[in-house]
Image 1 (cartoon, rainbow, N blue to C red):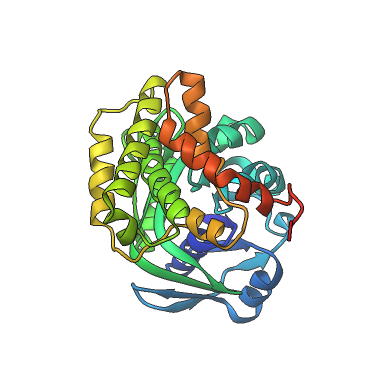
Image 2: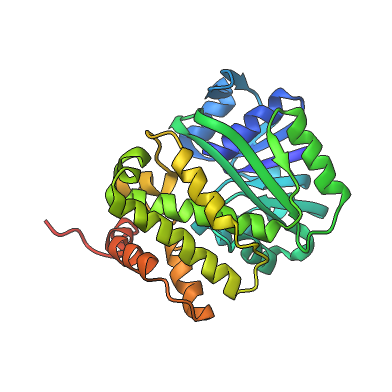
Length: 313
């Protein structure tokens, strides 16, 4: 398969590296020092599953240099999706599919609005990895996983081919029975981790050990589940217990990307995580008081990081 990875950050860079190692035809769309390092030295991946350096077929900042591909793996931040969708148009052929792996529940609909439903999959991923420096990805912990599927959950040759490509690369991947339910279950998990982590600014094990902050995490999960059910997302009712159990089992020293972005003063995915629960809860008529508190507590810094306020010293 010819695959373009648009955004070679923590998850995109890791997947690009693994796919190159397994022999797939991979193009990386990146920019700046990151792109320069990949071009000159290759993409370095330090992983708990083994370190390696991968050399993609092409690394560029211009999708027109690549042309139409079979699959676009979209690895940008969730708030960058509209601009990225416009920029990746040169990669789209008649049967190209775009696989979004962003946190949140709105990526598929945003991409569909711009590119059309026939070119978009639903997808999600899980990995603790990040950019260490230009051209250098570190996969720090946990087994990476992917879930994806066609809109409407129909079977297709292209999703089967993509699944086999990931499996050849040693990436745990599956096509779940209902991709919407899977996306929301991941959403319940990440919003709890992000919200409490960003608010407390400590690793998971610390806030998890304090009853009051643990209760906040549980409430975030339950509020998100209530919103999903009100929006007619197929949920069994057991998803929240599974998510809470997963959070309890996580390594104590972990943090997540939204938390790290907020702690380091960068724009974050606040709007598409806890903010989305608040917004969708209002649409569905479901109260979301804990997410409301976290979202609005973090919103001033978020706006400041985006240059909406002048620095006051």
